[in-house]
Length: 402
Image (cartoon, rainbow, N blue to C red):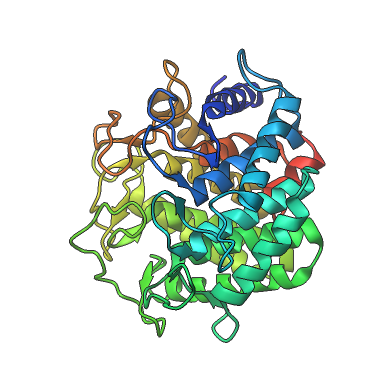
């Protein structure tokens, strides 16, 4: 049956099979629409961190392999490869410390990329992957020392390689993924300072969203003043689009609900519900077709009508968490709609994985993204209903598949 436990298990197994081809000498690379490694593309830090995280989860879940998919020993080897590449590979800057955003590409250093190093290390630690503890310690030192602004309780975004120039742009995308990795570190190590830091970032973000009718501002000046017109001329920018990003409203909702559970702060849960309701109201089926639009303007009118697979994945994850955290029936009803859409339009039964982008008519396209870069969002969507609520996926999966 669409979306049931057996359906989800089969989807996860296929994703783990699909991702094996992403392994490169220096980490994990991007995959094209047919699951082939994209030739000539640099190995990216965030992609390597995501694959390492997912194969650590697959190992913890003791996933039964799909035909041609990795065994448990092979998943351990893939996770070990990712941890090793992040510890000792060319993505790491031995001269100045930290990690480059890409090997053979951008040599800058970002909070966004470093958040996925820390996420990979945390999941690897829970999964018992060799080197994960050393990686976590090293990544935590860099994120604390270079990116986390203690006075603001937020992370800055973008440094040059020698840490001599900090870009003036500030953004909530990097802070959102920092919440994710801080929850993971706190859950993996038992050190509550990481959970409290996640809560602090969540409170700031929630305040900006509430002041903006629960549409989350994305872009800020270095003084943390919202720039609501930023990138108006680049409405489909893959990381910094103009307007409100519907999927981030959903993702923030899930992370706020998880943070509320971690620190016992009910107001964060209330904010999560408001964010999710706004994202669904603004984003779902707004143009006569099913699916979530990518972005809206500040009145909720669609700007980019593309459908991104990660947005639907976050809708699944968010509705799953909020259904259990709040007991509100509408979130369970939404899950059925989200899985029906995924089955009809996103799951690629010919070439594997999920189509990463659809056009406004729900036909596979590539206006913003090309190929099927990684399996992170889809794997998490496929497992979150089968594990207990927890601050991190790794501890939730470790607790057992229900």
